[in-house]
Structures are given as structure tokens and as C-alpha cells.
Image (cartoon, rainbow, N blue to C red; front, side, top):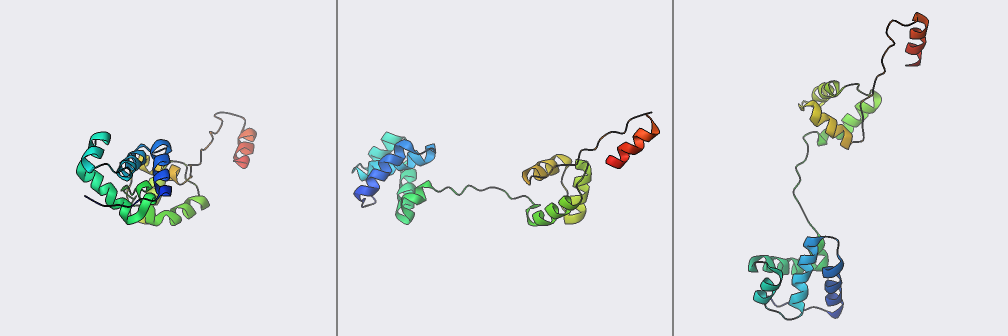
Length: 155
């Protein structure tokens, strides 16, 4: 069994965090350590919070390594886009000359980075960067030629 010494300030913080922290997983971690600070055995803690002994030991080791702040930290794995290393070049290129379709954007990205993505993937990636396609207007059909010229000049 792990022997951990808790100060009164740490016990108070564990108690507060186990009741009020917005993340459920952090509250459970704090509950485990709070029960440990109250002198309960690992078997009792496991019965109270419904966790295995291995998980409880992992939380104790995490606390010993980094304190209460380590219990609040999560390092979830997130895959990184293949376009991420080229982010600044893509933003610069598209800011200089916006695209009108996602197909065009996919083609320009493939030419720039040699990374092929579908139009939908490109749309999501550009949206995450805060970029949009340049929507084009329609030319009036069979309208006055002067009105068409005025429209083209304004576009």
C-alpha cells in the first residue's frame, strides 16, 4: 500500500475539487485521493468509487509525481492533419488568392503540399483555419448589355 502524506490545505483542496470541478474524470480522481487522505484502504476506496486497484494505484502514482495539478491534466492523443506542417503556406496562398470551389482548393493544396485530400476534408480543414471559399455571383442572363458591363466592373 502506498503511504502518502497530505497537508490540511491539500485535503481541503481535494475535498473542494471532488465536489466542484467541472470535469467528471477529475472529480473521480479527487474522490480517490480524498478518501486516501481520510485513511481508507485501497479496497475500501475501490468499493466506494467503483474502480479497480490498478486505477487507484495509477491515480496515487500520478499524485505523487505531480501533485493535485497532475490529477487535473489530460494528455489525450489526437491525430494531426498531414496538412498541419504546411499550414502557414496554405493560409498565405489562400489569403492572397481565395478559391471559389472546394475542388479548386483541393487541387491547389495538392499542388502546393503533395498531400491529396477530398473536397470535404479540405472544406473542414479550411474552416478550422478560419478560411472560406469566395462565393461568386451570377451574371444576369439575357439582360441589357450595359447592365452586364456594369455588373462585371463591380465584381
